[in-house]
Length: 418
Image 1 (tube, rainbow, N blue to C red):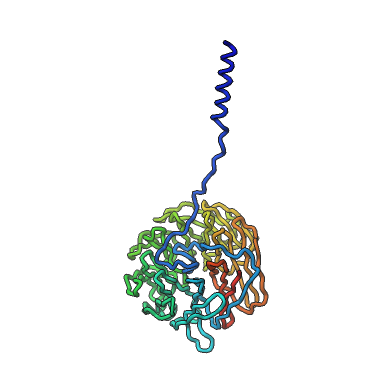
Image 2 (cartoon, rainbow, N blue to C red; image 1 turned 45 degrees about the vertical axis):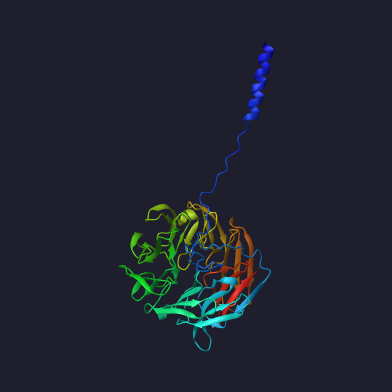
């Protein structure tokens, strides 16, 4: 009997061990994963707008070059400060003022430099406003100091419509989900919305002026119900029918915001030396001072951040020893790393979460590619470009080429890395 009890007990113990294996450690899922937010009014090309999408993420849907084994310079023969956007078949659109005639054009050309067409627009030589490509085959461009807005057929360059909305247009054009246009003017300072046919829907004036030197297009919430613009020293959430929903802050020295897939708005304020995450309605989610990010400053003027697919943020600035470079911050506002890098262009993130940033001078160009962990993957230096300062945004084509716009000395260059 004792033997039987012992056998039964052993059997139960064995079965227990078989049926109750050691538990495996839980895998923690990242709650901040990002996806591209569908925006049917924007072109489906590789880079249809200033920051690549309606939320200003600075994140491409395509992989950038893994090395810099090949490169070429494309000369446009015009002066420009405009950024470039990428349309169908990886063709490039930009605005420039032709040398000799002084006439401004919207140019469309291939990455190898072949001109497809050019269309005259009223714009200044210093036009730094970026075209926007719609899904209806229109390229929208504002003529800055002429106050004009144009819709130009992307196929043949013909002008679909044009309208003068003011004496001065101060921003690139943003598109809502329905294809309506949004732009700010400088004199008087107004926010104007137009239909895709060029008919004014509404105008909005606030007590303080909209940032008339910002040049960047407004960014939208993921559901498309509201967009965000700076006026005076505050950030405003505005509905697409022109009503102010809320405002945030006072004394903000900030020029760009980024919106993630959950609708969180990220704001860098140089005056208070803080990065802030804001929920819709203006409620602060978190706020991190520069000192906790090991930064002496993070740039805000013409320096929008970027966000990778893991929800990590990237800013350019100076560390505590005043070295220039890129800072990486988690989605919860925690410092991840700093890497020395050139800081002339906006930060660009590709689909592999690699980071690209560059800088150029009158004779040289430097472009750095780094991983999402801050490891430098490659660094390109050219001392023979004979060009000028880099424009703000780079872009990645669907075939994986990196387009680096340069402001040439009375000519325009696109530096293509592949």
